Structures are given as structure tokens and as C-alpha cells.
Length: 343
Image: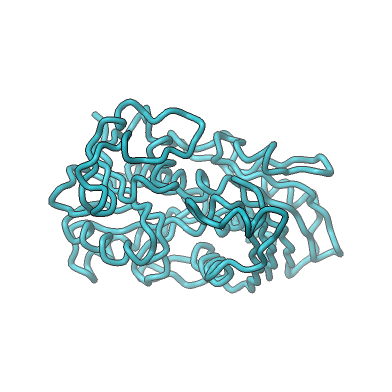
């Protein structure tokens, strides 16, 4: 038996990525596609502007788009690919109605009783689900995944915590697909770099602390590290690249960091990559065009690991922003919840 899943915001870029990744999924079957009112009643394959180089999956091409009303959705899990302002109301409606909402939206990530999850990093934070249901008197619940830039960064920071991680600085070079479709205009981004993405730096700096924090049985105690981010849009289609500087409270060698990266174990879940962190030792890797699909887009790739001094190192990390950084992250969260019998 497969779990029935629906996608909110099914016609957008992340919604399409959900559909692509869920095609032939061993645990999940798409049972509903929801979008804005102007699309309701239309046939998905006729209405959507498909943005990927694969065909629209046959199971959904003739599916009728429904409204974002819980009464019209038959599903065990609802994946949200909605803009934050829309998600703020719609996701609550679904959680109140008893649905499990796996959200890629930012609306509830920092709510005290809402889990913000990367399965390899903080699966114990799912303990907030019982608190959320009790606090809000909901039959369902909301679980979120982080911002796409944050995910790549935090996956690499998790194994460094045991080495005495003290502070982090990150400069992101973010792909245009991170802005959705149609996103940044071609006139603005071609032959250019835009050194500002609204709200991005704040998300990276705050979400990182929650993800690396400890669940004390009642709430998350944020991690006691310093995080500073500078975020930039670059003319790359897919794949966020980040330059990261890390400071430790003790002497740390490059090999210690490499061993820590390679020690992060994958999970026994359908969407888990064979390696969570792939370490490249070439001087000029990772690169978006060459490395973004590592682990079917679910691995993060690290390279150029080098020391400034005994307590300060730097490296480059790359990840696919709409797979590991968005739809794939929500799907992995849902798989984790199934495995833990929360669904």
C-alpha cells in the first residue's frame, strides 16, 4: 500500500519538482494537485508550463487541478510548495483538518512548536509534533524543511559541532531557480551578480541555530554559535554554491574536518543518497554544472577544504537547490515520519 500525497502549489517550479521526484516513488502516490483559484478545474498537463527536461509524469498529466481547500483533497500527506504569504493561512487550514503538512515554505519554520528538520541532522526535533498538536489542538501537524541555502550549509556544519565549532561565515552564490519562475529577469541577471536576496541572510543566520540546537523535551535550545551570511544571486540555473569559513574553539586539522564530513551517515530511506556529503579533492571542485546532481541531487558536495590557521578553516559546498534544497527535502522529511510511524 502506498500513502496518498497531494501537492499545494503544484504548477510552480518547486511544485513541479515535487511531481518529478514523486513519480514512481515506492512509498507515495500522488492523489491530488492544488493550485490558485484561476487554475481550478483545468487539466494539469494543459495548464502547466513544464520547466524540466523530463516529460510530465503520466499519472498526473490528465489530473484535474483542485482548489486549496482541505475538503477537496484526499491524501495522507500534503506537500506545500506555496509562497510564504499564501502558506500562512492554507497550511493551518490543512493541519486543523487532520492532514500531515510537509512544508517547503518559510511561514512556520521558526515557530517554537513547529519542527524544522533535516533528517540527517536533527530527527529528534520531530518531538515537537506532540507539543504542537497539544498547543494548537490540531488533529494534523506541520513539519518544515529549511531554506535551500541553509540546508547545504547545515548539513556540513552538523559533523563539525563535535570538533568545537564556534563561528561560521558564509557567502552564497545562489542559482536563479531559487527565485522560482519566472524569477529574476534575464536583463537583470545575465552578465551580472545581484548582491542582495530579500530575507535570505536572516533565514540562514536564524534557521541554522534552530537546526543545530537541542530539543529539551519542551522546546529547541538554539545552538550557541555565531553565524554571519552574505547572499548573492548569480547567473547559474540550478545549484547553490557557498564559500564557508569556520572557526573552532580548539586546534583542528584539515583531515579532521574531512573525516567528520565523511562520517555523516545516510539514512535508510528511499530518497537518501549513498553519501550525504561527497568530498572532492580536486582544486577546482565542486562546480554547479558538474556536481549538482550528485546523489540524484540529494548529496551535498564539499571541496577546497583548507586551513587559515590552527583554528580557522574554509571550504566550498554545493547542493541542488530545488532538489535537496526544496522538494527533495520535504519528501525526505515525510519518509522519515513514515519510518518513525508518525504518519
